[in-house]
Image (tube, rainbow, N blue to C red; front, side, top):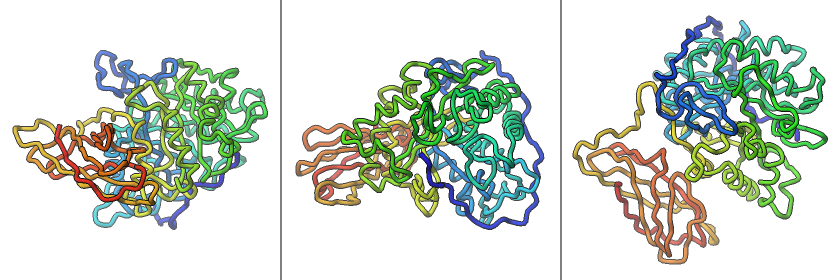
Amino acid sequence: MFRSLRRALCAAAAALLLILAGVGAQTVHADPADRAAAPGAGYWHTSGRQMLDAAGQPVRIAGINWFGFETANYTPHGLWARDYKSMIDQMKSLGYNTIRLPYSDDLFKSGTVPNSIDFSGGKNADLQGLGSLQIMDRIVAYAGQGGLKVVLDRHRPDAAGQSALWYTSAVSESTWIANLKALATRYRGNSTVIGIDLHNEPHDPACWGCGDTTRDWRLAAQRAGNAVLSVNPELLIFVEGVQTFNGVSGWWGGNLMGVAQYPVQLDVPNRVVYSAHDYATSVAQQSWFSDPTFPANMPGIWDKYWGYIFKQNIAPVWVGEFGTTLQSTIDQRWLAALVSYLRPTSTYGADSVSWTFWSWNPNSGDTGGILKDDWTTVDTVKDGYLASVKAPGFPGGGGDPGDPGDPGGGTAACTAAYTVSSDWGGGFNAEVKVTNSGTTALKSWKTTWTWPGAQKVTSMWNASYTQSGATVTASNADHNGALAVGGSASFGFGGAPGGGGAPAVSCTAT
């Protein structure tokens, strides 16, 4: 299904000269005996439907798309409002462990100049005077320092827009492959970059398995994947689907039905991850949204297009993009169903479908983002839908700054404040803010309250809960249990029927 353009282009170009001096890292081959035992360490490979880290432990991508390099800004969006380090720190604090960075081949042109970056007040100071690829280096370095992984996404041939095929009249296949190899070489030895998404959303007339080398995306992915692995054999190769296979159409990049008959075969084994994209009605209508059984019909739809690859243990599956404004009830039910289909972390751990949500940016026209328009405030409802499928972070180079460390004999205590954010009679949304009121850092917390009426929790984000009668007990999620002295964390939930007044909430440091 054709999609409307989601990428917002912002700001005028600055009068800077681009310096594309390569700063690629030297090749490093780690001895397996020296590899860290913490989950996520080193480069990854595949085994059946799972991705495994350097030590053979299963890992799950639970991440976010941060776009902008692929637009005429030639740098991630939002740097006109905030420092890039604070942005990455916030991603990590919310429990995202991977960043998908879209880019275009314009980054490799000598005339490309990054623009719309605010350097006032010390913001983005170390990006001043850098070219786009050098800015990418800084983002990769800081993400890796904080324990996040990065997937590079060849999103467009140029900043003008997406393309159906991997090449255009202006950007040839040879240019596409040469630039993929350049990035693979640039980050060789740097396992923060775990892989490359070869091309974003191939669609009609792209085919899968038809044998026409000018249209067969599967054959093109093999050519490009082998070229990347020839210079950096440790990378994962992420291959998206097409739009139509054997007359059955779906989302751009979302149709992987052809994998069963025509799998991608690379010279280096255990490197292919298949990537699907899936969206809601805020992007476009599809027939399945009007099915009278919706959303119960959706697992069967996902099974047909891409889920069978995971279920049949063929290869790992990564939903590289999915998003919605969440304005309609249909979209809300779609997102809840998809998150359940991705398999909650608490039940399945890393034996799950991986994902990166679209998008971090609020300026995605038909989905919006995790951030609101001020580029700082989190859309806690949207982020909350993802809480059950978030996954533990990966080890950073300098330790986890959020680690509360040794309690040191202080007093562990917390308080909680309950606020009803909306109440429409038949239901309500509320938020609970937990604050460390003690004299030592907390590692975890739990809250308890009792409603005076018949209210029930219908969904909860950024915490887990149990309810017995009118009494609810909510405990921290993996990513927000650690609180420094004076620090706070919030979780939200929906309930029914109407919320009434706010009950008293007790908080226990555990």
